[in-house]
Length: 147
Length: 147
Figure (cartoon, each protein chain N blue to C red):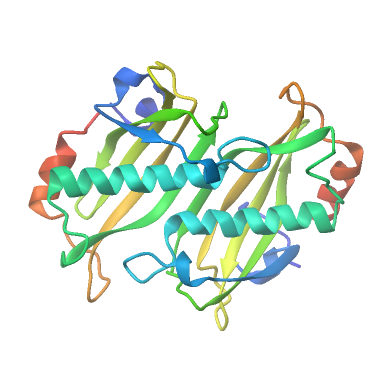
């Protein structure tokens, strides 16, 4: 694992602290024959959600405190196309009282530079009031481990 | 108006082009809100529709097409199906081969954006994928959206 120094961006696989495979699907391609730009965000979301469930035990249906997306960004560097197998990676690059920033990247076989990179910001809220609340200790510890 | 300033002002009157967008049942995720990824589908749809209807873009045969190179969205308040929303569109920067659109989401008749972001297109030759100057008819249409 690299130490990110002067940038919060994911620049290679080693910058990631958690990765998963995301198979592209036929219907992800748009009329131009590339994966549509919107789908990149569903790949980002897939790795963030899987990370929270698998490593943090988040239960979307019953947890009283849940994370909501408040900002996302993507820089598109190379096009993806079905049937590419995409590796989606993340690393925690910023943690506040109630918000956390995941830097994210998408990779394809044979290339260590990301095809796309960006970030995903979650804020923790109370599920009933929608008001922001401190990140639960359990998740705070998880985020430190994956920084 | 600089890009920085224009991004700070997100009143309905700051966007010269407004499009009504009906949400769909499947846009809601398990929080009961429109999923964050779907906002980018609204952005993509509004931008392309403007280019088709006002810039004469032929998405089936045009030799020059717009490719997304960066997109971003900040989510302030949630929306949910069956709301109909309104999307505001303006041009913040018009370069030789690229354009930066700024978009905002409003509730029907709302004056303040509940989500806002940007979308950068670079125009490329469909066959070679190399960037080329923005076609004149499209440039003329984009000039009208300058904030």
